[in-house]
Amino acid sequence: MRHLLVLAAGLVSFAVDAAPAATTVYVHGHIYTGNRAAPWAESIAVEGAAIAAVGSDAALARYRRGARVVDLEGRTVIPGLVDAHMHLLFGALTLDGLNLSTPERSLTADHADEFVAALRKFADQHPDRRVLIARGDFSTAQPTAPDRALLDRAVPDRPLVIHNASEHAVWVNSKALELAGITDAPVADEVAERNIFRDASGRPGGVLLEAAQDLIHNAVLKTLSTEEKLALLRRATHYLNGYGITSIVNATGNLAEIELYGALRDRGELTVRTRTAFGSVSVPHRLSPEFLADLEAARSRFHDDWVSANLVKFFADGSTGYVPPLVYRPAEYRALVLELDSRGFQLMTHAQRSDSVHMILDAYENAIAKNGARERRLRIEHSFLIQDADIDRYARLGVIAGVQPAFCCSELGTGYDAKDPTVSDRWRTLLDRGVRLAFSSDWPCMWPPDPYFNIQQAVTRQAWRSPDTAGIDAGVLDGARNGGAKPLAGTYYGKNEAVTVRESVDAYTQGAAYAAYADRLVGTLEKGKAADLVVLSQDLFTVPAEQIGDTRALLTVVGGRVVFDAKAESAR
Image (cartoon, rainbow, N blue to C red; front, side, top):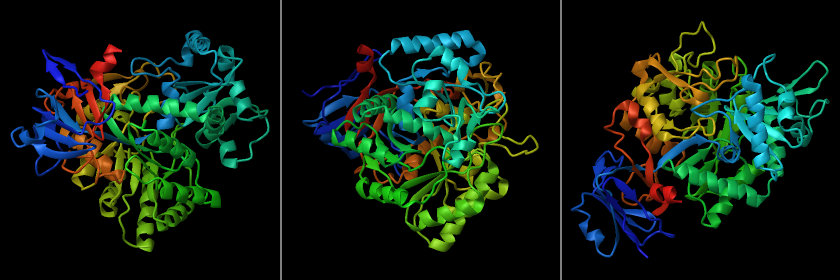
């Protein structure tokens, strides 16, 4: 049966078709197309999975005959949002677990009894789970990092893993250490061993940083069947659809994870388009035959509109302790970049320090010079701190700045050296110098992965502080609404680095699509492109800036198919 969308008396009612209608026409809308030649429209005609036409109601009247007509009644529509940097599998695990660090409050070990009670309650509510997953805030520097004793008190009989909100550290109990095979003896991998906190006798304390996390993550994933992983991902992708997110770039992953998305695609159950990078958090790449074979297998098998690869993620530094630790020596990183670039892979690199950014640009420039000109779409993720001399190098080398506006702007800023006067998060300067911005959430680091709040923060640069995490001296995720953070009076320094609403929407659509090599398909609403769009609860282009974050997705469409309907969800 075909359904008619009815909006009346301020109430929105959407009905979800099991499959895309042959022809659907959205009419009477306030539609931002992103097409510079015709940025605004009233109607969109969809045939199957693609956009057949965009224009005025009158111009598209002929498409209505025999079609399903959706009356938007003036609602604002934007292209489907492309989250250019997130960690979907981590997000899926956390979404299914216990979140102790929300915008409302961060429950930390400073409140030990309440903290233990929350973990015990969660364990009691899930007696059949082999491993318990939580998310929280805790110190990632010795000697203030917590140990496993408190977690053993909460859950003594099953593995318990608490992901730091930054996803650069885990805090685990004794059973989790046992699951991962971490004992008093050093582990074989020297990089991982350096990141395991131990006492003077060599006993692991319970906190594992950066590359050492892989020991825990791999052990946890082995406890889950393929069907369990697919169920977690189905729930997570639907959760993302609820924010109007229709495409993502996974900033960590491997062939096995990509195969999960391929399985969902083949079942017709994948509701976000995915591009997945090879890489693990702060684990240095080694170009082993096995790793190179997996890279080649991924790009040869997965290169369609729903599941794609051909992307490698580096971590130039981490995100723990008082200063992010370096992962590579410059010569080592440069050699890896040169080799993988010569093989035609797209490269993206995490950097929180300005000296890391400088090293990355040096390596990218060297690869361009030695491997010759081609379309690369090189990326630097976060781009918090950039030396003045390096700003223009982004534009000259065609480097995309991956940005998460909600990570700006804590009371202290994102500088690590008190003597360094560099202003962080220079979005306006980057845009004005011709650098392309790609917005994202870095979910589950940002919770929730709300694009509208991200846009609000990009426009306002509101300053924030969390009273809940004030006692944690290292390892707290910087920024807005993270871990119970509350807005402060006034704006963050560098107010002139704010960007406009339209520029922010473009960074979340066109810029992010370009960064994902998906701009031929998504990012704007134009004839021939995929019918990926979002109907919004309010016009984020005209509401007061401080209210942009109140925007909600009412209807999310991916490839012509309704994948999220707010009215239907509320009726469940």
